[in-house]
Image (cartoon, rainbow, N blue to C red; front, top):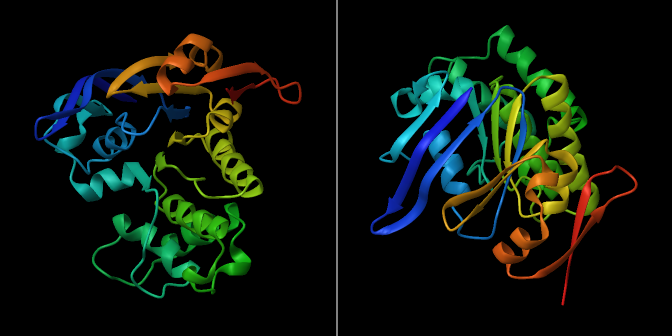
Length: 256
């Protein structure tokens, strides 16, 4: 379980997060939404131990995340940033193998457990046919799946993802979110995803956290968070909200 109490953080004099309080249970699929600059990415980086020096408490398994060694924390949390530049001509398999570093000592040759984890990650993300292809030559959707596969190879119970479907077409957006939903339901992974696509979040996430100006405004099931006055106030646009008859999820359409 992750417990956040009184979390605040600032860059110089500018507050980025202000008095955040929330608890995330194992196995939840949580979407973090809100306009640009609301503190979403900073929140994920703090949970993942990439930003320290915050005020308040962020505890994973009853232990402050700032007290975890980076390798220890990587065994608990896999982080998928908005974009990745490998800097090397990795094949897909080699990229996925980097997910095993928290379980290895130095640059040792992969043990059998590492090979099994990599093979399983490639299978789950349906990347086995692309395993020996250069990562940089994949399509955007294939690259995103490869980065997620590397996170899966970590075999961490938590996955934090920052805009995993940005710049992808509709097919690949649905593909990524279906994969994440399956990981939550079938593998009992705790998934926390930042997204600007409220409709995807409403369709796939069990729970939404709405942020604005560094504050947590609403937290709960999509039906309790995606309300007319709140969405219109936060995003500054008029919206039409209804039920999608195909899957009973909420959908939102802005209008002028």
